[in-house]
Image (cartoon, rainbow, N blue to C red):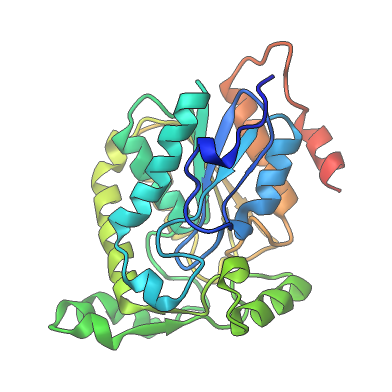
Length: 296
């Protein structure tokens, strides 16, 4: 079994929010969402590391700082952050899975498009192609039109509001307190500029064009109750991705499925998906049932 890699060996972004867990031969790269933080993937990363995988969770460019830091970046900067980590991981591991939460899932698909045949599988959690969940104002559908007019992008600012993608009331209270206190490294930003939304739209457009040509197998996990992005997003991926798709809909969580009430199920589904991709040998990770027991 490989020794645990040092952060210096793989680029996991600026600051100290990014992390590496585990020491297995098979690697999993997980990418956080827009205005988010690696912390939102820690529970899933711990579960995957516990059953024998090495998990890399980088900080994307402009994140875990201020709104000004994020506005100074573009979607290609976010992508390059993920790509730099991926290239470092590929130097250490022959088998690499890539996944992410929300926008991180979209970046994962773009990585697969840019590196065909090199990624073993995609773990797509709460994929965000459009903001259309039950907690999104109906007027949000007009956002692309507003951004199309001169300086329109600078007129937009979107503020997170309860339930913040979290059904677990106890966890929601903690995250809300951290966001309002400006702890962006732990809970992400409370608001998002029009510039960021415009860049997400551009990323999504680039990915949609490539989706039919992405043949990498994918696990798509989404909540039926997602408050930010409806199940339409998962259905779209299932219909349009060029490779085989396993789609699972959860029923007791909101958008942040990697930390919410059913995060253990997200871990177990991910482990099962990875195991199905390989005929494991003597160092076979634990079964899905054992995964549930370890995380309980």
